[in-house]
Amino acid sequence: MSTGTEQWPTPDTAYATAPSMVREIGWTAQAAIDKPFGTRMGREFWLRKAALLDRIALSEEAAGHGGDAIEAAEVAAARLMDLDDPDAICDPRHYVRQQYALWADEQ
Picture (tube, one colour):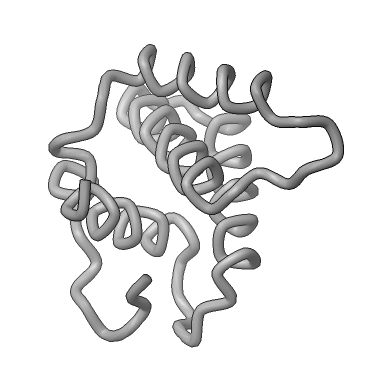
């Protein structure tokens, strides 16, 4: 995990190789269903969920909407930052994009 001074990627760059939003909804739902009761979700789950919610919020923002979507994206992004406990102080959604781009490059 990197949290240094790397440039913040644009959404288009960060999500260039991301699966469709429908596929990611399916992945996050299945991951939650498959989780044994009482265990915590791992970083990949929170990263992918935060990225998905960010993508939904971006599409809503582009359409001139997005109140609930933006709030959900911000909450999920903050959850990822809490999990990672980075040294960086930044916009949580920018952090999600950076971390997703780095994670996607490793896949």
